[in-house]
Length: 57
Image (cartoon, rainbow, N blue to C red; front, side, top):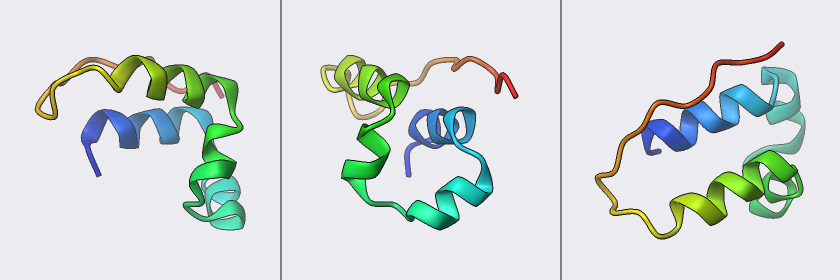
């Protein structure tokens, strides 16, 4: 998994939530912050890297 994608998931979900929902794309994209990130990163190069906001929890 790409580091910024992984960081986005870590920022928006607890480990328990990820275990419960697994890596089902539909479930992950139901989160508005994840959907916004995916829409934004879709037009970036595969080797793109950026700093992602820290976990707010």
